Image 1: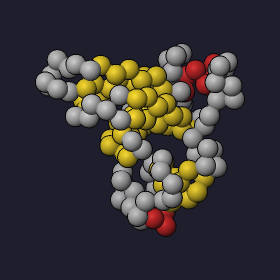
Image 2: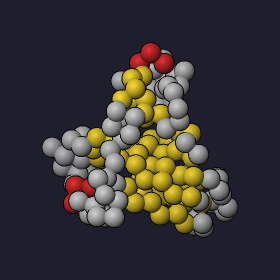
Image 3: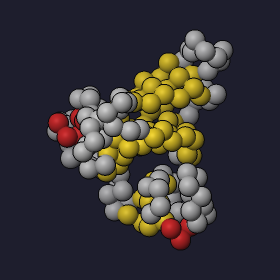
Image 4: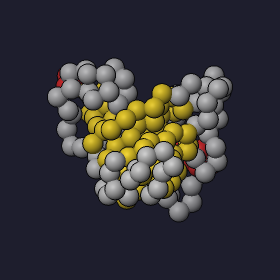
Amino acid sequence: MEKYLCSICGYVELKDGAPDNCPVCGAPKNKFKETENAIKEPEDKENLTDLEKKHIPLMFVNKSCSLIEGCVDLHVKMGAILHPMEKAHYITTIDFYLNKEFISRSHLTPENLQPAGCLHLKATEGELSAVDHCNLHGNWIAEKEL
């Protein structure tokens, strides 16, 4: 999948073209590079390999929240086979998008965290995307309608 990738922080722009500034680190447009395979895709979506099962995010939407009335919870975990979180191999970030617009980044560190993240959303409709970054195997995406 050809996308624009920030050469400073690794953010992937899901819309066409590079943004004027990176929404994560503020880098200017000239720091973006059009990158083939910026987001990895499975060879066969019906028959995922173990590598793909560890990297493609799974998204769960809960339309009710025990913390905030009217909140929609988005839970994301890395893989049908849980991704390792070891110093040599781990998920570094999870970027969250609503309708292809960046809304949040979670930074993960190995050994003390699980490969997962959660957001409390105000939105009640739209397309959610989660892009995880593995330090060895790059970026992977999942998308889901609210």
